[in-house]
Every structure is written in structure tokens, then in C-alpha cells.
Image 1 (cartoon, rainbow, N blue to C red):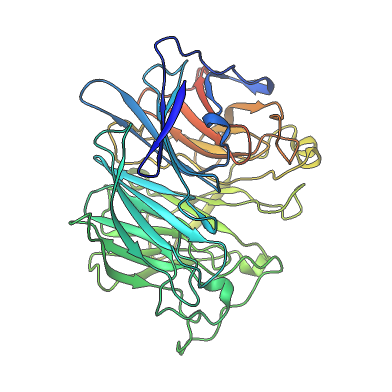
Image 2 (cartoon, rainbow, N blue to C red):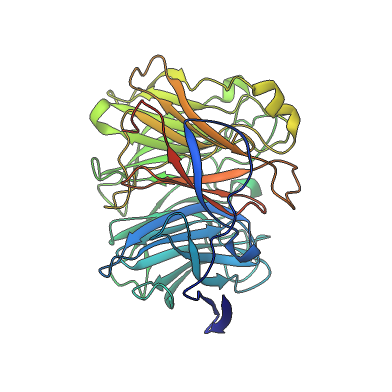
Length: 432
């Protein structure tokens, strides 16, 4: 494989005889097998944004955001899942930037840009044309930099019309600097000129709010937004994790004026970092994840919860996904252990829509799958944990994100040096 660079894109052109990267050693597994692997050209630092597209010529291409430098995005040909090949990489455009998240609609890709510190330049959202995935072309940029802004940490873009961002802005002044990211809706009908359409924040977090400042939990990660999910089954709603502020359901039927429908929080139990809320509209359920942010389970419990949202203004918790049998050992191994991301049922023909199964990333607990056919008694049905990858500062795998394709293959990336795994589920309980 040889590399060159054109217009800030590192091109990786595979020869006809390119060999597959070796399959990683496995520390433990049940009903899951790693069938393909890419070390992402040694760039590592897998983020929490993956999207898959099948092109008219039959190629299947995975777009993967990186959690931190040196790369912003990797583009991987996964047509042969046993031999994934990096075909392009986009470096971070400046040393103070990270590109933790991305979204894809058709061949238009949006990429988050977050700065290390508030007030630095480059914060916002880049827009790329991926019609030729080996030669992605930048076509637009939304600037959300400002004196108190670090820009975009996470985004959702799936329908071609609107992107939903966790971001700061030039004119958004938080009462506490840790509360710097709010919900912003961006009009993407002209992807070369994205523009803000509306915004919402948790009352009491912005200078000038009449509402009192919300209380804090002991491990203070900020009362700010993390992940928005907009389901095609309920396009007038956004389901949003709000970190230490809990989670919310927003009415987004009027894009200029989002309205609060429901708000739930574990603050009374001194638990924070609500991360993702995935609605399963057909069952009146939501899966709400938390993120483990401390090593060796210092911030446990960080779990995935099942909620009854059939009465959306009054969500009720039903159950939590059970901890693994080797919970104590994982807590002592090093690095983070606990919940993080889950497969999000993206409205793409290349994504599997899961209504009875949850597939998630659990840092040193690897990739794990659970049956939620009985929402009151979820049970684990499979997992795979890589052996500690070479160069991982945590001395453990740190699986950061997952994507499940329409064929049931699971794509999972490591936060540090472990690259990308492609995993086959082999259990008798179907991923459905």
C-alpha cells in the first residue's frame, strides 16, 4: 500500500495483493468472532461516529470519525469484511482540533470539529462530498466558534435536510464553562452553506436565564448536551442525552423553536453523564446509555437503562442491562469499564434496525449484545473482548463505538491504538 496527499486528504491506494491486517488476539468471547481488522494505518483513536454506504458499483464503504489527532476521518472499503482496506484519510486540519463524530446522508458527510479550549479557531462542522469515497472533497463549513465555545462534539445527520449538533456558539454564554454545548438544528438543504435553524438549551445553564442553575453531581462533567437521535418513526422528536443534566425529549416539529416534552435525571442519586437515548417507537421504549469516564470503575454505576416512553411526558424506568460475569476483573484491569455507545438504528439501508436487541461498546468490556425481548429482564447474549492492543495506554481494549449493518456484522473501534474490528455474531438468539 502506498500513500500520497491531495488537498489535505491522505490517499491510501491498495495494491491488488494487499494483505489483510492480522486478527487481534481475544481475551474472552461468547457468541462473537472477530472476522476482519484494520489498524487504520496506525492512526488509531477511533471516535464515536461511523456510517456505512453501499455505492452503485457494489463497494461498501465505512466512514469512521477519530476521537483525536492525527486523523479526522478514515474511509475504509469493507466490501470484503475479512480484508478491510483504508482508501482515504482526512487529517485534523489544525493541532487544537478533534473530529469525534460524523454523520452521513447519501454521499454528504458532516464532521464535528471541537477545539481543545474555548475561544480557539476552527470550531464547527465541516461538510464533505463523498461521491468518490477515495477522494472526498470539502464543500462547506459552519463556524460555531466563539469566546466560550469549543464547537461541535457530536452530531446527527441522516435525512439530508437537517443536522443536529451538540455545540457552542459565538453568542452562547454559559453560566458555567462546563455547560458550553447546547442543541442546535442546522439547515442542510444547501450543504455548501449550512445555516442555523434553531436551538435549545437546558434552562438555567445560560447567562441571562431566569431559571436557577441546576444542581451538580460530584464528578462534574457539565450540564451540556451529548448525543441527539432523530428517528424516522418519530421525526418530530429529538431524543437527547444531556450528560449531568440527565436526558430530554424535544418537540422539533417547529425547527426554529424546539420545545421540551420530558426531562429525566439521576442527579438525586449523584449519577451523571447521560449519553445517548435511542427510541424504539414501535415498542414505546427508549434505551438510555451513560458514559464511564473514570478508570477502574471509580464512577460506577455507568449502565444502559430501558425506559417506558409510551406516555412520553412521563417516562418510567423499567430495567438496566446486567453487568458481565467478570465485572470485578474488568474493573481492576485498567482503563475505563462501563457503558458508552450503542448501535443507533440509523435510517440507512446499510443499518440493521434493532428492536429486541441492544449492541453496545463497553470500553475494556469490549462489544456486548443483550436481548431486550423482555424489557423487564434483559439478558446478555454475546460478547467479545480483544486482548490489550500494543500501545494502549490503558493496558486494555477500549471499545468506543459500534455500528451494526443490515447483514448483522458489527463494526467496532478502539479509543486508543486498537483500530477497527469487524465482528460476526454467532449466537442462537437473533440480532433483531
